[in-house]
Length: 430
Image 1: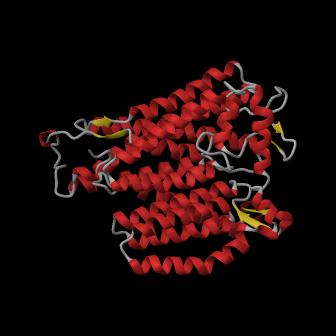
Image 2: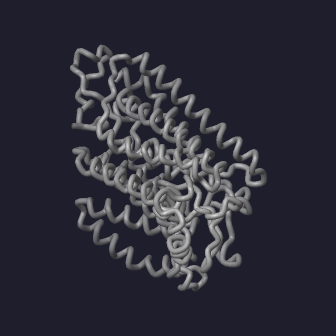
Image 3: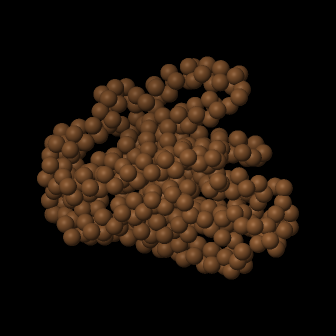
């Protein structure tokens, strides 16, 4: 189709935006904290501005296109969570950090809203070529190749030694290995969706292999578990009995190796049982930190009792400025009120996922939520400090809010109506 060729560049532009957005969360210059912060903030605001300009241009070019909005209540509850964070400035024990995190949160929301509008419009203009799973899967694969290249050129920066040097984990000083593992699982999940939805088998398998290699090199146990669940989900949805049998047989052979090399690192079973010291830390947070400010917490992203330190001093574990569990984080920094708002918001999001008639959208959302929620129990998470996990969660929420309005055929003068443009393939199908 002529219109598809005209807007083919949208796939590459949106992939570049996604690629740059994810990179804006990396510590690009580990030796200079100040330069890294300036670059991060500058890149994010620049991308938001570029999305706004591109959306304005496309809307003026295709004036007949109309967006549709559904499930707004899910988005309103997320805004309520953000606004409670703004109110918490008045009682925060670390006002400076609270304000910084709020600025990053609202910028992420603005970017996600603009970018998802572009995704819906780009999907329509390219007749499905600029699909969400293809853009995200391609971006993660390119980032994975970048880390593999960095591992070869500068292993001291891209590898992080733990357990007294016995374990080396990809991510190094550029990105937390667990966060990088989560990104790899999301990339693999998008490849699974691609294998079901389009005919780009070679590229999907190649990108999947890259994501799995990155995952294994991160040595992330939580991400490995997420990958197994995502893989099991798509395998069980397959109609091939032989594939299911081969998967379970292969899993039985590979699992002992994974347990020995990744799950039980350096033979330390106690570390696994305590989740690397997280369980006693959470216990101390809830036992000693939560009762002091149970209703409204210590302020957005603040978990410290003392205004003179940004760390909670755990009695039985370690001192840290974040809880390594996004749900405990909300409970401590915004209290029971914040926890209630977040729980309702998630329930509304799950309800929107469950009621959609689009299998592709449902699978894409579930495949993303599995690694996001598992990561949320051990790291920054979807309600934690600024990270790309929050950005991805924004996209999942918006996936069921922003869509294309079904207009009569006469509204499209540029040959948009074709046999390939089936209404059920568009975002937010009815």
